[in-house]
Figure (cartoon, rainbow, N blue to C red):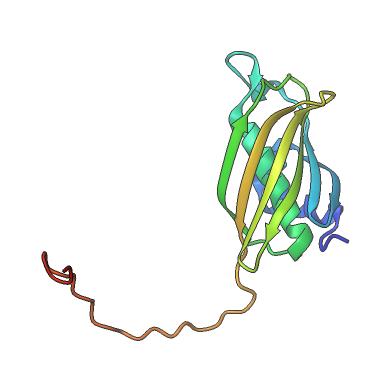
Amino acid sequence: MARISQAEFAQLAHEHVPFVGMLGIQVESLEAGKASIRIPFREDFIRPGGTVSGPVQMALADIVMYAVVLSLIGRVELAVTTNLTCNFLRRPKPVDLIGRGQILKLGKRLAVGEVLLYSDGDPEPVAHVTCTYSIPPTTQEPIAISPSPPTPLPQAGEGSE
C-alpha cells in the first residue's frame, strides 16, 4: 500500500510545485513503488519539427519519480532530484504523454528508479529515464567535527622505493 494517496500526491504537486500545476498533470495510478501520470497534450508543448519538447518529457519523468518515491516514504516534500538521465527513443506524437515509473532501489538517503514515457495509444516508449532522488534524514543529529591540521602532500621522491 502506498504511503501517500493518489489525491494527496496530486494536491501536493499542484500546490507546492507550481510548474507541475501549470502542466495539468493527472495521476492515473499510485501504488507502493509505482506510479502512472498523464500530461494532457497542449499545442505549446510542440517544438520545431512537430515533436513534444524534451523539457516537457523530462518534467513528466521527474514528477512520476517524485510520486514513486513518496509512495514509499510518505509525504517528505524535501526529497529532491539529484540526477535525471533521459534517453529519447522516438518522436512523441502530438497527444497526451503518459509516464510509468517504478523504483529500482530504495535506500536510507537515495532512491533510484526508472520511468518509461509513452504517447497515448502507442505501446512503444518514446523515452527511457533513470532518476535518483535524495531523501533527507528523518532526524537532525549534530555532526561532530574535530579540527585537524591539513595532511602535507608527499614531496617528489618521498615514499617510493
